[in-house]
Image 1 (cartoon, rainbow, N blue to C red):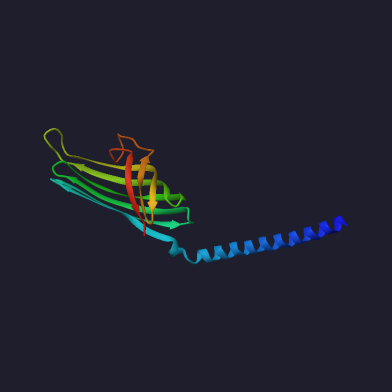
Image 2 (cartoon, rainbow, N blue to C red):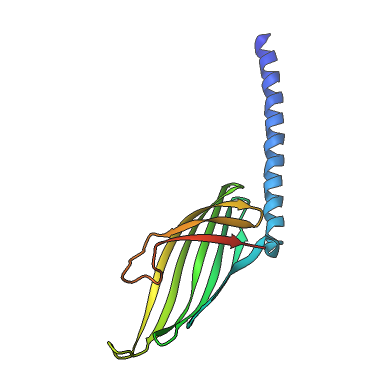
Length: 183
């Protein structure tokens, strides 16, 4: 008699589990189909602008970017960078290139980032009393790893170029603070 009662209970559990997992698989399938039709709803645009002016000094930079939110935790994207730097009677430099961006939000307030940046640097140095004029052109590669505090669409943090070489890098330091905004 115990065997009959046990087998009837197992059948009920088997039916309940089957219904549960089949409805779960249908929900997953519908989500994937629905997700593909709303690509642009998961795209955000942002970037940075930089302006610096002084006595005989000009620094202008424009860095637009776009990310795709794969889910609530991971986003991937691309960025462009254009820059102009001029120090009167010393040098003039143009910087242009792009980057690949990955953002990870393990919790909503914390954002981890990895950014691979490749830029072309074209610089022309003017002659002065100690040296003749000359130009320098090269590619600079940087791999930034960073972390920041995120609130809404704004993240404030710091990043470090793990490929930083003081003799070849575009910047004076491998460590950089940042403010990142995506709409």
